[in-house]
Length: 300
Ligand SMILES: [Ca+2]
Ligand SMILES: [Ca+2]
Image (cartoon, rainbow, N blue to C red; front, side, top):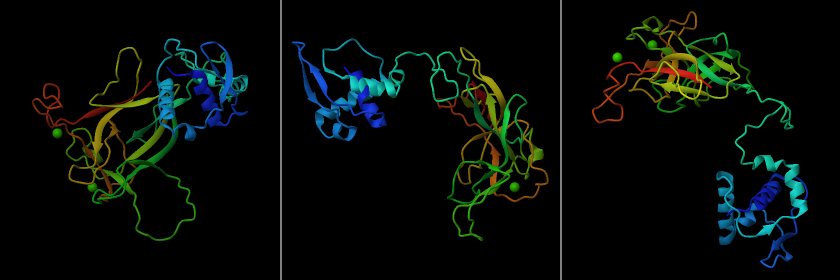
């Protein structure tokens, strides 16, 4: 069984929160007390087998709710108690499920209702956000060249207004960044985007905490949580024969960066089609092989 008081004292020491923890006392079965040791720092703690076991229990303290009262063990003196109070560790180690409330300052204030600042997401294929979302910045989609084996695999929403810091003229042949072009000529809904370049927007959904991209759906999960649809779209990535990228959710009504119809072929965007197999992980009962995969970006 872990000793929460000792754990808090060690954490306080690691955080450097005030006076040193000294003069621990051990309560014997006879209930007499005597000095036994100082509290070790974590590196010392991990140096011996028995202390390693203690560190294991330390981990359990962080992950498990408190169990029943164990036998009498080490007790912490007032100096240690003062330290963790200074660090507010009682709140850190509280087993309460109640969400802490903050007043946007450093101090905890239980009387102030905590309101999430918002949750950010990238809206691929649109240069703006929904009316009820806040535009953090507008950008252009960028990524590694479709025909390069190396570089990065993620798409970026690249700022349109860069700030350089001591640039070196010319290419020194490091990693590269290219504009991102739609390759959607075979699409039912987006053939007009073929060979144009994709915009993007980084948005803040006010009063939301997290965002989630759900591949295969155009609606958000329902149930106990009230998920909000930020946008629905179609799943895209680079072509299966090209260098790998991530899958991203491109807005169902994707737009183009004006005057970018040239066929530059830097980073590319192809619509993702599902495969399925009888007895396979993607069930043919619900997925039709060759159908374009939808997606939804949701917030909570
Ligand atoms: Ca092209
Ligand atoms: Ca198809």
